[in-house]
Image (cartoon, rainbow, N blue to C red; front, side, top):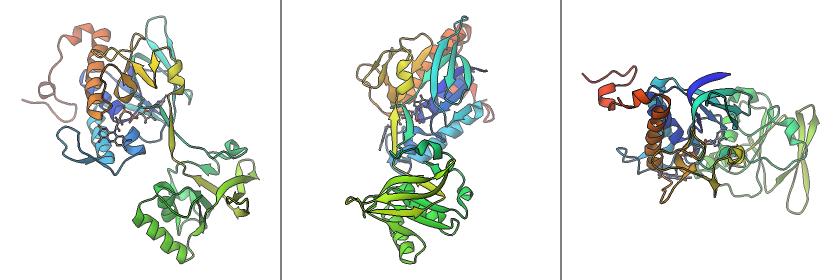
Length: 339
Ligand SMILES: Cc1cc2nc3c(=O)[nH]c(=O)nc-3n(C[C@H](O)[C@H](O)[C@H](O)COP(=O)(O)OP(=O)(O)OC[C@H]3O[C@@H](n4cnc5c(N)ncnc54)[C@H](O)[C@@H]3O)c2cc1C
């Protein structure tokens, strides 16, 4: 069992800023996210899109905003638990909260901040029989180490940026690269699609369109081949050691909606003066939090993070809450303090 002052569910922009706000008040944090990377919607949905309404940044991309938030949080040494979902919540006899994750980690905290956005991001899985036996062994929805696919016959399914970018990245490393897409038209960035089509012409990538995944063949989680079919039911067998399926992400508030707070239209009702939910000690901030006239904006989430951190300090260490200083006076560990 791990102990901390505040457990944060969700490492989107708002969860990341909550690390900083808690840290400035001397509250230690652990952060959980279902994705393997931090950044929430900014990274999963629009890393390269420019954002124009972050105060003091006339323009910043989703990815750069997340990198700045990561750097701002870093001095407070947050502990990240990625690739797992916040699952269970129970109250301990001493009033603290115990949060369990899908990876079996137990976190005991004085308070929990839910910064879950629209819910846990999960890859959309193709509806193929027995696919779960292959997942993580030879069927993947994300790749962290390109080298793991060296000398393998790789089939990539999908027509967006992930599918095309990985096809380009694996040419020359994988034994063969085949791209299966249900349409002849790709929705990836035009320049990347052009590069891929050029490699198709040179015979370095095989394009199988318009086909959809139909069945997997193999044993003990090891893929040997897969069958694809077109709209008229024509089938083709493709030899394969690995399938990378890139069909986008969906969100699910799932387990959190069973924690017992008021959930309305996929949002959690909070007291707008503290961000506290109907469960004492559990706070909700960012897109997941709802109150009258709530705007779903990053900057509103940032302010809610400041409210929640202060409300938590008042509860956990009421004496300290009387002496909150400006950042200019207090400084940040490792970055110094004003004279
Ligand atoms: C295309 C697009 C453009 C946008 N442009 C702007 C803009 O210009 N300006 C602006 O202010 N806003 C913009 N937004 C909205 C903005 O991205 C959101 O307001 C912001 O991401 C909310 O941040 P968040 O941290 O609350 O939630 P999110 O970014 O949704 O992050 C929540 C995180 O929590 C995780 N999570 C949820 N449940 C669990 C669980 N049970 N266990 C573990 N992890 C969990 C999720 O996986 C996710 O990573 C845009 C959104 C989109 C889609």
